[in-house]
Amino acid sequence: MSKIKHFIQQSWLLIVSSFFFGLLIAIASAGWSPRIERNEEEKKYSRMRELIDDANSFEIAIKQVEIPGEKGKILRTDIYEAFDSNGISVGFAFVAEGPGFQDKIKLVIAVDHKCEKFFGFKVLSSNETPGFGSKIKEEFFGEQFKKAPFGKLDIEKAGNAEEIDSQIVAITGATVSSEAVVKIFNKYTDKIKERLQTEGLIDNGK
Image 1: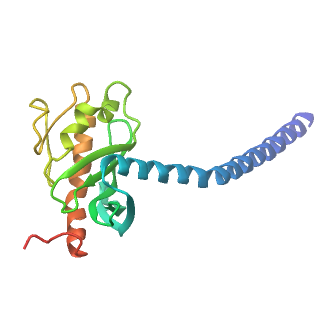
Image 2: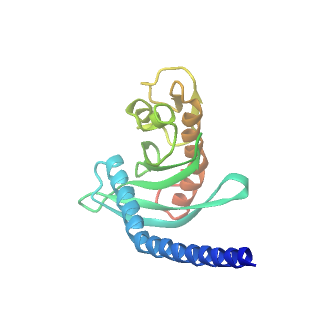
Image 3: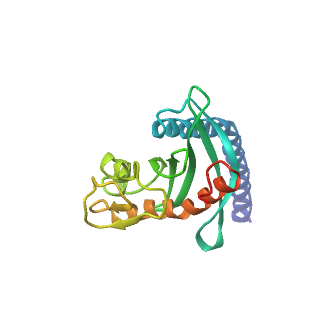
């Protein structure tokens, strides 16, 4: 009988303790959430400014553009329009994401105001393997996207990385992560341009 009583007492303490610590975690999470979101917003705007040198300000041009994702999932992103100090449009930027080798890769991608060339990309978040997949953040890889023609990009294992075109040379030892970045670009390209044309923000090419 004493064993049963002891078991009940211990179980009761465990339940109460679990509830108490769960409540503390929930309170802490709620308290930190606004700060985390604010930091992410600041990081996003910082990345956009790094990509578009002439930008003085950013405004959301189109909200919640729908992008077909993996396994029928719909991704949504806002398109930001960049303006210089004279209020003239100098480009567009948006957040794009997709699966990497280890985890999800999230990028900030920027294009010129006519949507003809990429300004490049900056990594917003990534958990790729240090020393390998993490090299997608390095200049060697990122420079290939600057002034590359806006449209479908292809990945190749060897080639001239200094030649700016639609052929992106993969990082040695990090081919999967390199391919992941190119796939993210290609996933978003058509839909972004289509919406910009529909809203009259760029010429429709006719």
